[in-house]
Length: 279
Image 1 (tube, rainbow, N blue to C red):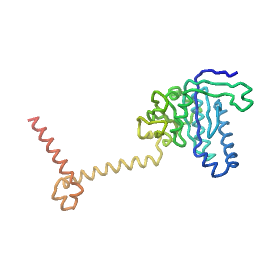
Image 2: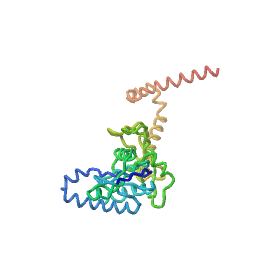
Image 3: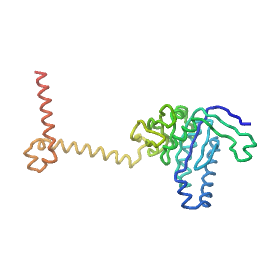
Image 4: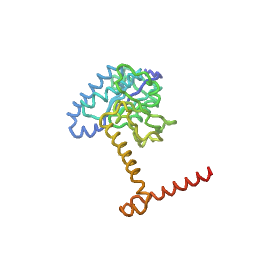
């Protein structure tokens, strides 16, 4: 007899990127051995963080009692397994109501899964995963609200959350706010939508915090500001000459700085109004 129980769970959808092309490139037998290696690593990590495997295809559908355990699993996965397997992965996480279906033993004997999950929460997790970039972990606002402020000693140091936008999921009534989580700034960038997920708004780019910037980022940060300051300083020094049409013509700069006359005229216009008001 089928047993159905409604409960709240954290659903994690993990998808390997380019797995079909990988199988075609190396052949079925070699791909099977390599994917089994990937699966052993994933299941060992799943055991460590008290997760449960629900289904497997080009990746995994997993469930967790604890949303923080799900987060730690996803971050540890992205930080440790892809460098070993050289297979990119994207992960979507959602927390919500789900119907847990436990099949009768006679059906599992002929291949049915022992536990299946049904409900909109599974679809939301899948949609969230579908817009991930390679190496990225995305959370719905429901999952983020459960996790927020509850990181523990297993959460990688330097983990940062960033709101990446508001998205409308096909078949879901209300728009959903999506958060990215990670250690590297590249994994926090807002993803685009797709045919089933429409981006409604949000930041174009997530910037790194000053304390998290690396040497390369600090170099470009300083270079841009130095260029702006230097340009303003040079213009300030040259302004007396630039404001004179005769000097500009003499130097052959009239085609470059024609707009100076407009600025000078606007300045004089504003000064005349100010003087008339204070007269």
